[in-house]
Image (tube, rainbow, N blue to C red; front, top):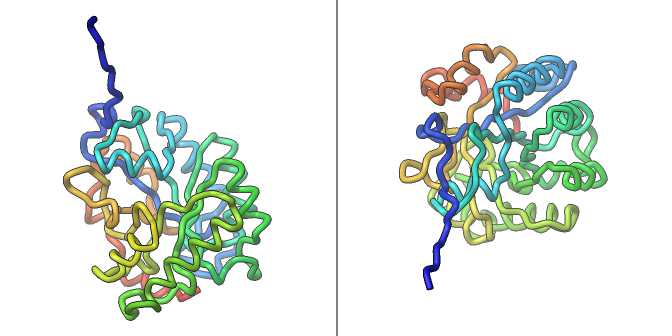
Length: 259
């Protein structure tokens, strides 16, 4: 008897041989008084998402990206992309969430534990609603401290406590983590793995590609209020973002306060 096995390969279209892009947002709001450099207006966010949608981009889940990075069998769309948000601002729910639903995109919100139920931050109710409607949640530490300054139990608890909180609110597994400020050490990497995360995100620029990148040092492309998205879009569409254009700068680090 002849048995034929058919495998789904973990490769996107030929266009995406350079890797998968992950975009990083913070605020989506008309109010630019809090971290103005990291605030994108709702109209601009809608324009950016619409451009990606019309060009054929499709958002993927964390599990899909992890499987791709591990070169496991997985089905990818022709033009995969991931949208992420850091810190857990309330405008992610009031402004970004409706736009994402309108274009049919998912996203990942990396939540800081102490931000849950704080003023102008996401509430448990909002997190649960988003989680039930296509938005994934990951850990962003419990107190948003610089993890490179921590050791041992203090370091591990930053990963573990936020993971437990999000799992309790969403009733779902939490597989991904984003290092606060993008700062990481080998100890932070190991603590993230020990806490049970399957992948972690940095602010290293560029695309994510197996054999070139590690799933615990995933790259993201930051979107600022002054990002020329038309220029970036052309590079994304060609799957050839230039590192120089995407590098994080001291401007970001000066604005990003501990939450």
